[in-house]
Image (cartoon, rainbow, N blue to C red; front, side, top):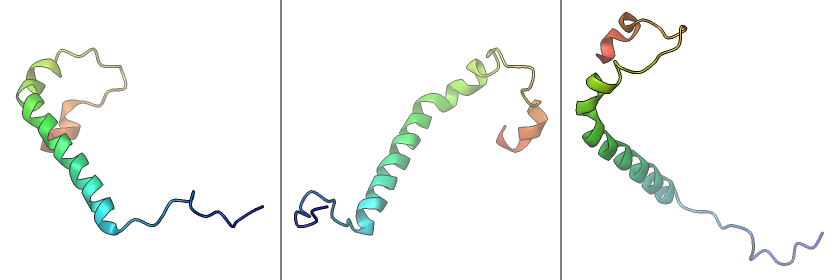
Length: 63
């Protein structure tokens, strides 16, 4: 195996790149809640849920 050409290998990226990627993902998720949070009570109740769906009291803190 020829290891003389290492230019095709990825270089180490700093933690700031990882932090930036996480921040962008979190911001996009938060942006999605801006558009959907007000509609959850109307559409979630009308979903066809399977028999193994837990009752609402299991997630009482989230309501």
